[in-house]
Image (cartoon, rainbow, N blue to C red; front, side, top):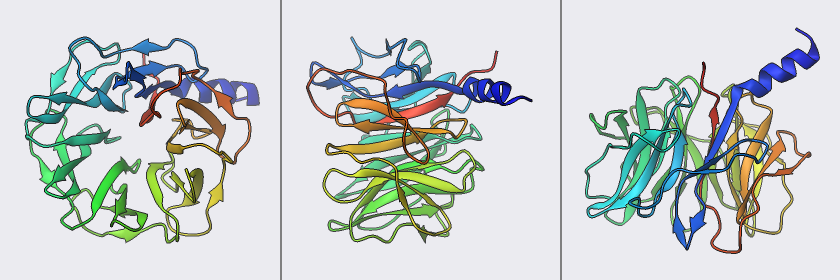
Length: 278
């Protein structure tokens, strides 16, 4: 295959980016193309406080959270916003879901007492399993491409670091060891690296190998920077910079701005999905 052909094929892997902006100071779920065109609002009207969207591996459905009379519960919907289905009925605050690349389970965080723990459920909402049992906040989970590890951040009230664990809640491994906080990990498509937010002040985006080694800072911002998400073809990383979404090459550089939001609360979540097969 020619270089041009390979580049076109790589771009075809990349679908839309789902994200959570604020409309009239209320979070809703939107999607947008990787070039910044075709923005679509998927929730609203009867969706109160829709938040933290995550794509299914097929790129055809989205899992997300929304406020209900019993708490923040998880739902799924088609990529056009139709066909909404409720997954959880926990009377808890269920947040930040991530669909496994194998398509069978969803990991998410839930507030339990005074801290946040990780759970998984099947994609129909059944078979809930608790993964973590501790006195720290475990949050912002992401699956490895092989579905054998889950990366997440843990905050003990003083320090925030990134760990991985098996889907059965075993084999905990610490990935970052920094004096500054590290948060919101995103696995690369190969599974060898993660991108994450961290550093001093409002944070930067870093990339490092999961099995160790130095980290590489790929942004240099003066505003709130977090929630990286790797492109399906592995060439770029989307991230939040204050109230807007940008993409950047994995080694840094070639920064592209996708959204031009009105002043308001910072964006809180995004996920770069795959393009659905025809």
